Length: 102
Figure 1: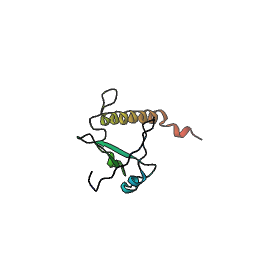
Figure 2 (figure 1 turned 120 degrees about the vertical axis):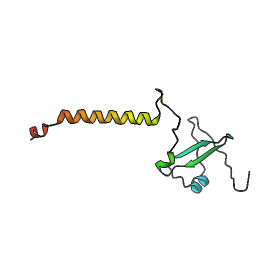
Figure 3 (figure 1 turned 30 degrees about the vertical axis):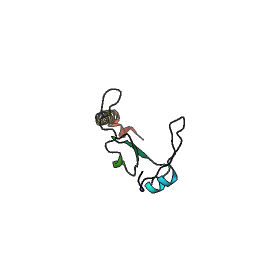
């Protein structure tokens, strides 16, 4: 381990939760509550990186699919189309009913 590396041992709960030591949270600027992402390197090491904005999540779902084999982008497109269709049905249902309201 180099002089720039530091090491802490923490316990993992039955629910798979581990507490990030205060020293690391402060050094990395991780707020509590907050979000981090875990990255596994080719060497098998786990790297913890803080997430400060949504753009930090870019690529997290790359190559992943849901139980129906859809990528996150495909699923999002389908959800948006479904929402548009639902909004259109609502507009059609209530179009022209403004005059009937007191």
